[in-house]
Amino acid sequence: MSLEDYLETGKEFFFQKKYDYVIETLQQVVQVDPESVTAWQLMGASFAELRNYKMAFKCYQKALEFDPQDSATWYNMGVSYEKLNDLGNAIKCYKEALKIDPELEDALINLGEAYRELGQYNKSINGYRKAVNINPTDEVIWYNMGCVYDKLGEHNKAIHCYQTALKIYPEFVPALSNMAAAYLELGEFDKAAECYKKAGEIDPKYANTMENLKPLKEI
Image (cartoon, rainbow, N blue to C red; front, side, top):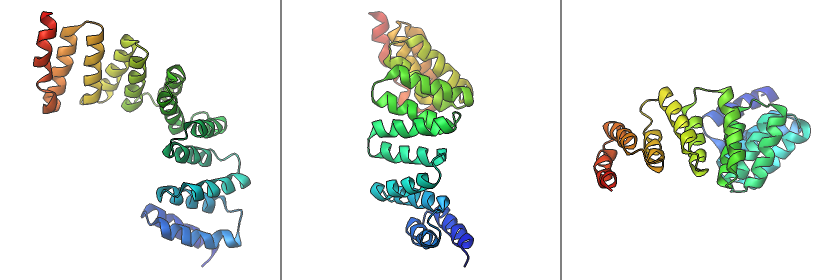
């Protein structure tokens, strides 16, 4: 088999989620061609899937040694750091990926999520806004941005985000539920009840929520 054949076999094993076989196959590639960025990347991703992050980092670092301008490697290394809850290093990696590819949507989303976990909500919003500018039809980005606005107490902006998410996916129950909670924070009981009603029509577990809100309205 040629090196190209080994690489293709490694890719096939990866898509089949046979990560041990990926590593075993591609180790033969880097023994002959230690500068094979693709082999190092795939081995890194395979070690990460096996939760062997120490080895994953070594592979990613080898890939970056030979191609420091590969945004995907920086991104994947950031994901591994995030899995370890090392958000500081994850953010550094996402930023490096975005220097190379400013429109790398997944890096922007993960950057927003990492800042949200750290309680740096304005920076989180910035990441989500850039992501939604690239992909305005991703309801999850709009939803996540709404959650952060709620954290900031900016409930009207949160409601706008949830409404946008629901235009894209009308049966997005978490968006309906969070929008109801935001309306409650604003004292808009009727709108909150309507959101819960719609949520209950989609998911029965929300069906009684509106009834539980009635005493609040009387107060």
